[in-house]
Image (cartoon, rainbow, N blue to C red; front, top):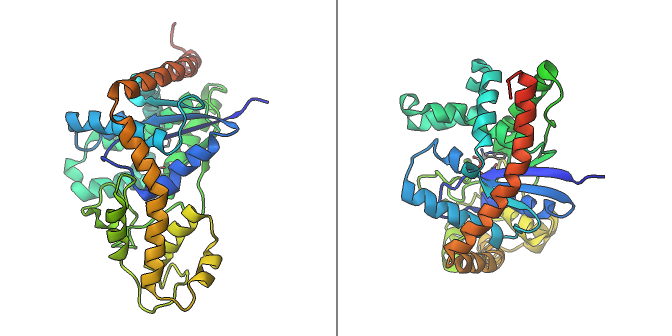
Length: 332
Ligand code: TYM
């Protein structure tokens, strides 16, 4: 039986991915490489829907590739590539825009949140049409599974709707993908503001643990993490969102269950617990950071690896696009 195909993407919009990206999505990208055909994409075209800084875009695209390889994405096992090197994404994106309803697109909560942040008038059209490009990303590869964090659930739902609509109206063309969202780590919260998700666009990085942070910086951020009243280390997202978030992080990285951690820290204070979380995070990230820095010393090697990925991606993408065009009645 053919291996199931996995597709996912990440925006190169910051110098470092954060622990939310890692635990919510990237860790699953790595795990799913075994026994699946993985397509992993650095979605630079999506990044254009925010502030465009050419020097930073290039730097962050290469840094994203280095971090992905460092955290375990193997360019031999999987297809690792940059979105703009496969023009079929834009071509299928247009078809998706022509299938999606304006009202349907207007209901996307990420668009509503992001456009509200900068003032609705300054939001660009690309931010609005973003989910249709995301649908095209996934459908081009006939992906079965899409590992993402909770914040992408609605976009995957839209992708499924658009694929179903196309198939019903124009004939079987696309595989309908399923999301792959881990319940336990689908939403990592900001350390300073546990009511909000950890995010690259957060106004302060004090609450954001970055993959490329030094162990000292990790320890400092965790030490100053907002905690809750009381002193017991127990999981209660409502009453103790700060401690619960730290328990989630520890558990996801150490593999210990939340219950085991609660017993381990019974009778100890928040200070001891935070020190343990800092250790687990720093030790986990230390080799990843070192490997990424080493890879970043050779830009050309990274560029070459990404070109190989794009060649592999294009062969699949073109097949799907041709099928879609044919079913739409275009003359070849
Ligand atoms: P992006 O670049 O914002 O985030 C990359 C991945 O990280 C997850 N994530 C989180 N998970 C848990 N807790 C958090 N605090 C947290 N913050 C981010 C995201 O859910 C995502 O899985 N639209 C996508 C990129 C994209 C894509 C695609 C994804 C474009 N095309 C096709 C899948 C398939 C995005 O902006 O992710």
